[in-house]
Amino acid sequence: GAVVSQHPSRVICKSGTSVKIECRSLDFQATTMFWYRQFPKQSLMLMATSNEGSKATYEQGVEKDKFLINHASLTLSTLTVTSAHPEDSSFYICSARAGGTEAFFGQGTRLTVV
Amino acid sequence: GIQVEQSPPDLILQEGANSTLRCNFSDSVNNLQWFHQNPWGQLINLFYIPSGTKQNGRLSATTVATERYSLLYISSSQTTDSGVYFCAVERRGGAGSYQLTFGKGTKLSVIP
Image (cartoon, rainbow over all chains, first blue to last red; front, side):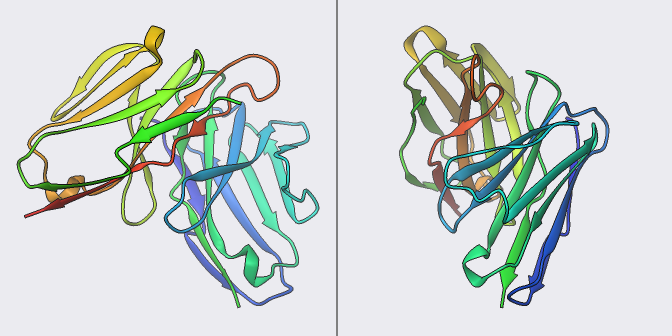
């Protein structure tokens, strides 16, 4: 299957700082990328959908100014958590698709804000 | 939006046993995928199966789109099969196209 690489896998940051997470599709062009958040023992919750070269579409309740998404190329999307607070601590996972084909997921990033 | 229900929520198996996991969905779908989330959080693609039957080793899956359900079969389970199994569906058209909606998952524990 296709490979989606997400970095970093784990990050600890101080409250008030910003953290950038990268998501790359290594062997295909991802027309659409998705960002999910997962709390312990829960399912994946979609945060936003991004298409290359256009603004991301955020799900209801997700603050677009806190979670900045950039999809500058067909192989790279970034999620920046701005002014992070302890309640932003979570597991963040990206996904990539080429049109309506099978979705593939990155390894996830465990963010801890102290 | 579309609703996805998975059952059972938890399952404990003796190594070597077989199991069936179920995914019901509330509307017609264009895409259905099964994933295994390992203890490190990685989502492993198991099947891309909007309809029909597929097999891959000890795993197989069947989706009956007209009756809005999918089944994942695990035969001769091994301890490495432990983890959470997710079903995710996509209903295309209008807002939310290409988005996958996840069920709550089935947590499988295989004991030696």
